[in-house]
Image (cartoon, rainbow over the protein chains, first blue to last red):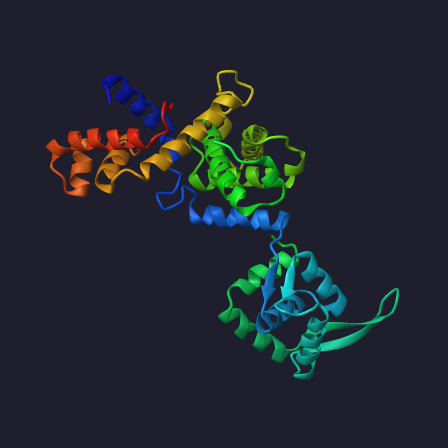
Length: 153
Length: 187
């Protein structure tokens, strides 16, 4: 490298220094927290299909109901819009999970009259709150998933 | 330095990940050149917001070049909003000094870098950042300390436990290694 090339490179480094100082020195030039925030915005525009296990889906349903009581159709519709699916299952199997949660006393169904028919709106019980808190403690991503489904991010 | 616009429109994650790196560097170049005293968090917020906004309207953009210019424009607009907000606070008596005056921010000022120049500044920074990662660490930390952080040779020698007389050699080797990792003919 001759003196002119060296001088040019030094100039470029100094010119780019303010930006370079804000880029990451890790494997990627993007700091991890920046990439995470950008991916959240991208998820909103182009949702990834997420296949959840029955246990994960149970935790997510509890969290969604805790945030906003809803009937089975609304829940399945919102999950579908945010591209959440039950691993190896069909939408109808989510009704099965809701039914099981209701039988074990974690959620309570209250009938309400909608414009077309009677629908059962699910509310979280105190037992369900405890179960949800346990699920939240063991699966940190539940909150983020619920935010995606509810359009809060 | 390009990404296929059609891949971005389909939400291709690999394409978006590369686009994020390029567009983030470009938005930072806008913030650093037009509002240098904005803190890191505020600059980061402007960049993320600008790229997020681009994502929302990606279907309307014809090329990745167009994306870069849009990110420059949106970043400038966000900076303007930011300073207007601060000025409004000042008028309301919450601030004692106009940051708009303090930082000399004026998007209409012709002396400010134009969009193409800001795109180039961001792209060059990204190219340098990627090449720097390939420079052996013992040289890289000296080059970064001297040219990016503005440390003196004495400070660098003290920080890294090197002899002051060897810093010049480390800088030369670091620059040479950096040059070898830059694209042919750059800049």
